[in-house]
Image (tube, rainbow over all chains, first blue to last red; front, side, top):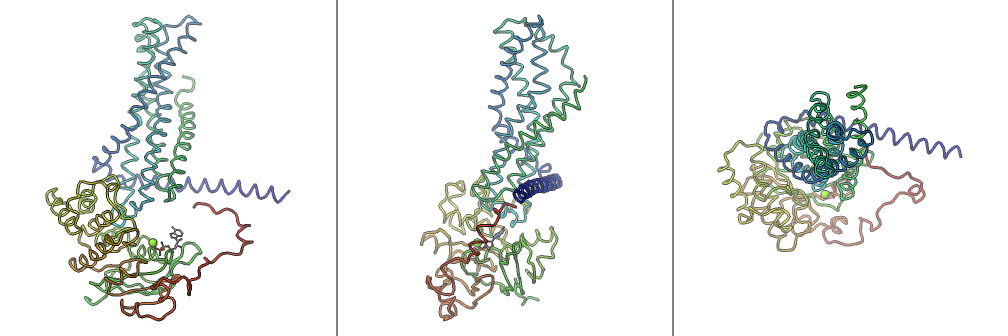
Length: 264
Length: 271
Ligand SMILES: Nc1ncnc2c1ncn2[C@@H]1O[C@H](COP(=O)(O)OP(=O)(O)O)[C@@H](O)[C@H]1O
Ligand SMILES: [Mg+2]
């Protein structure tokens, strides 16, 4: 009985230390990526190419999801607000929910499952088929040539995608609120404009999405680079990218929100 | 010292963790020659190539390439040395997101500041040398195994290396592609004035084209000599290997840990 307990504890301890090891490893990898970012910035075409791929990969899903989320916000928001007789605040509600919270978070979750997993799979496959080794043997550093451009592409794309998500969401809220339900057009927009603050709301939302961009891109390139060079290894790493980045996004969102909007 | 051999391995040992892979290997690759390293799968042949290319460090011994001690080189020194080496990976390792042309152009674009016109001429020459000038626009996924191997070969020699290493260049090729690749390795070596190392377990194809052979087993060199020496060798291991006999010094049963120990061991984990 006691030995079983000890074995259980040992297993728990091992998995904790393993995770810490991995975190340390991933941090060193991030450092190396930043250190070798020179090529990704100097030959910016490499990064642009990856921005194109991550952007195109995620654009449709981001736009469509943004529209639907905004439309749902319009319905739910109107239903709640009109109970308090303040349906005129619908524009404010839709815009603030999206810009502060749902835009960055949902776009990041979608980005992780669409682009993040694709980046992991791509790098993992390059590893499994020895393309990274071949690059090393050609005296080209794969972190500089393959990893850094993808990392920066993710970091740049994320705020743009989140902004598009929010814009589509606001449009969706407008469609439902104004066109379908009949909230006054002028009130919808003017309320939104007067109550959404640039510094407090928009800048903070952009900061959030930039942080999420770093998190997702970091996890995606690390999982790909670190995966076992086999088919199972790659598929496992792809799953881990989605799971880990989703959790990390939500945890980081809580912390950022706590700092940004406490009491305000 | 022009007479110094291009590559020298002196008493080289290597292990992955506690598991010894190579034990006291001595090897010499003279300039201008094609040398084969043969042995059964898992015998440490690829590991030897990675030691020469500096992707791994020996746990003991000396690895010297073109007058440099490879394990002592810093990153820039190692990269400078690698620019003069070409390596053909086991399945070609072509960049799957690039066309044949861009694959061959890759080392040129990364390392030499050449005009696109010059890159085009050089790539065309290399593709011509492997007989695939017409395939320049194809993607790696559209190539047969033999063609992919030849494109990888063109890429490996793009910078006119002093040393070309081939990891299992014959694996998975049909007999015709096999002899095409074999002949190419020899002619390119002689045309470039380079040295080549072929890692293979394809005895008969490689014996046709190589100058010297090392046979590795269980991390040690068990035989060496010219193709004639190897073909005529009466040493039991060499005989078994060259003639592909099931019984001999290499047991049919893979060496196993005691059953009890294997069952009680905790599940092995990824690093
Ligand atoms: N990254 C690694 N970690 C642990 N063991 C490895 C690793 N790579 C190869 N090995 C082991 O080293 C041995 C030699 O491998 P290798 O040099 O690839 O053999 P060969 O090329 O002769 O088939 C094999 O038994 C293999 O299992
Ligand atoms: Mg091998």
